[in-house]
Length: 116
Image (tube, rainbow, N blue to C red; front, top):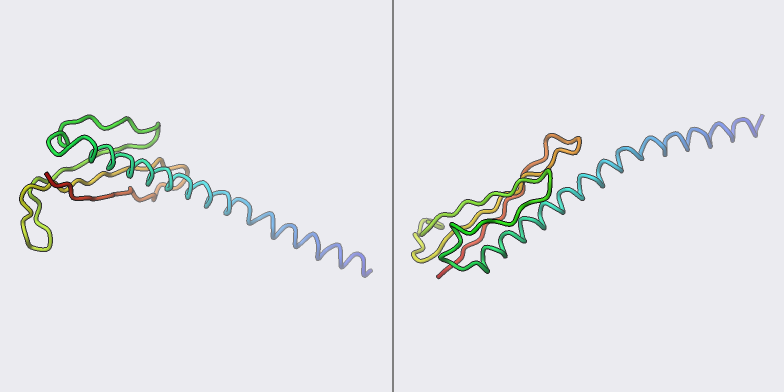
Protein backbone atom coordinates (compact mmCIF):
# COMPACT_ATOMS: atom_id res chain seq x y z
CA UNK A 1 0.00 0.00 0.00
CA UNK A 2 2.80 2.40 0.91
CA UNK A 3 4.59 1.61 -2.33
CA UNK A 4 1.42 2.38 -4.28
CA UNK A 5 1.06 5.78 -2.57
CA UNK A 6 4.75 6.59 -3.12
CA UNK A 7 4.45 5.60 -6.78
CA UNK A 8 1.40 7.84 -7.19
CA UNK A 9 3.25 10.78 -5.63
CA UNK A 10 6.22 10.24 -7.96
CA UNK A 11 3.95 10.02 -11.05
CA UNK A 12 2.10 13.21 -10.07
CA UNK A 13 5.46 14.95 -9.59
CA UNK A 14 6.68 13.86 -13.02
CA UNK A 15 3.42 14.97 -14.66
CA UNK A 16 3.70 18.38 -13.02
CA UNK A 17 7.28 18.67 -14.25
CA UNK A 18 6.31 17.60 -17.76
CA UNK A 19 3.65 20.32 -18.01
CA UNK A 20 6.31 23.01 -17.42
CA UNK A 21 8.44 22.05 -20.44
CA UNK A 22 6.24 23.62 -23.18
CA UNK A 23 6.06 26.92 -21.28
CA UNK A 24 9.81 26.93 -20.70
CA UNK A 25 10.53 26.09 -24.32
CA UNK A 26 8.24 28.88 -25.56
CA UNK A 27 9.91 31.38 -23.23
CA UNK A 28 13.41 30.39 -24.37
CA UNK A 29 12.36 30.61 -28.03
CA UNK A 30 10.81 34.06 -27.59
CA UNK A 31 13.88 35.29 -25.71
CA UNK A 32 16.13 34.06 -28.50
CA UNK A 33 14.05 35.88 -31.12
CA UNK A 34 14.14 39.10 -29.07
CA UNK A 35 17.90 38.82 -28.56
CA UNK A 36 18.42 38.36 -32.29
CA UNK A 37 16.19 41.36 -33.00
CA UNK A 38 18.16 43.53 -30.57
CA UNK A 39 21.46 42.44 -32.12
CA UNK A 40 20.12 43.26 -35.61
CA UNK A 41 19.03 46.73 -34.47
CA UNK A 42 22.42 47.40 -32.87
CA UNK A 43 24.22 46.26 -36.03
CA UNK A 44 22.08 48.57 -38.20
CA UNK A 45 22.76 51.55 -35.89
CA UNK A 46 26.52 50.89 -36.09
CA UNK A 47 26.30 50.44 -39.85
CA UNK A 48 24.63 53.84 -40.19
CA UNK A 49 27.18 55.48 -37.87
CA UNK A 50 29.99 54.11 -40.03
CA UNK A 51 28.26 55.21 -43.25
CA UNK A 52 28.79 58.83 -42.31
CA UNK A 53 26.49 61.75 -41.64
CA UNK A 54 25.75 62.54 -45.30
CA UNK A 55 24.94 58.92 -46.23
CA UNK A 56 22.62 58.03 -43.34
CA UNK A 57 19.46 58.84 -45.33
CA UNK A 58 20.42 57.09 -48.56
CA UNK A 59 22.69 54.13 -47.84
CA UNK A 60 20.96 50.76 -48.16
CA UNK A 61 20.63 48.86 -44.90
CA UNK A 62 21.98 45.30 -44.86
CA UNK A 63 19.23 42.76 -45.42
CA UNK A 64 17.59 41.27 -42.36
CA UNK A 65 17.25 37.49 -41.95
CA UNK A 66 14.05 35.83 -43.06
CA UNK A 67 11.12 36.70 -40.81
CA UNK A 68 12.65 39.92 -39.48
CA UNK A 69 11.99 43.37 -40.97
CA UNK A 70 14.49 46.20 -40.50
CA UNK A 71 13.58 49.84 -41.17
CA UNK A 72 15.01 53.23 -40.30
CA UNK A 73 13.66 56.72 -39.79
CA UNK A 74 15.91 59.78 -39.93
CA UNK A 75 15.07 63.23 -38.58
CA UNK A 76 17.47 66.02 -39.59
CA UNK A 77 18.06 68.78 -37.00
CA UNK A 78 15.81 67.06 -34.40
CA UNK A 79 14.22 68.77 -31.43
CA UNK A 80 15.36 67.17 -28.19
CA UNK A 81 13.92 68.30 -24.86
CA UNK A 82 12.52 71.40 -26.55
CA UNK A 83 15.81 72.42 -28.19
CA UNK A 84 16.54 72.03 -31.88
CA UNK A 85 19.91 70.38 -32.48
CA UNK A 86 21.43 71.79 -35.69
CA UNK A 87 23.90 69.63 -37.59
CA UNK A 88 22.60 66.38 -36.13
CA UNK A 89 20.38 63.55 -37.25
CA UNK A 90 18.17 61.43 -35.04
CA UNK A 91 18.21 57.88 -36.35
CA UNK A 92 15.66 55.29 -35.27
CA UNK A 93 16.07 51.67 -36.33
CA UNK A 94 13.04 49.41 -35.93
CA UNK A 95 13.24 45.63 -36.13
CA UNK A 96 9.96 43.75 -36.42
CA UNK A 97 10.23 40.24 -35.03
CA UNK A 98 8.81 37.04 -36.49
CA UNK A 99 5.75 35.86 -34.60
CA UNK A 100 6.99 32.34 -33.69
CA UNK A 101 3.66 31.55 -32.09
CA UNK A 102 3.59 34.81 -30.13
CA UNK A 103 1.73 37.34 -32.31
CA UNK A 104 1.96 40.00 -29.60
CA UNK A 105 5.73 40.47 -29.99
CA UNK A 106 6.62 44.15 -29.86
CA UNK A 107 9.08 45.54 -32.39
CA UNK A 108 12.49 46.61 -31.13
CA UNK A 109 13.44 50.26 -31.60
CA UNK A 110 16.81 51.87 -31.03
CA UNK A 111 17.34 55.60 -31.41
CA UNK A 112 20.60 57.53 -31.53
CA UNK A 113 21.84 60.99 -32.46
CA UNK A 114 24.60 61.30 -35.05
CA UNK A 115 26.33 64.66 -35.45
CA UNK A 116 28.37 66.05 -38.37
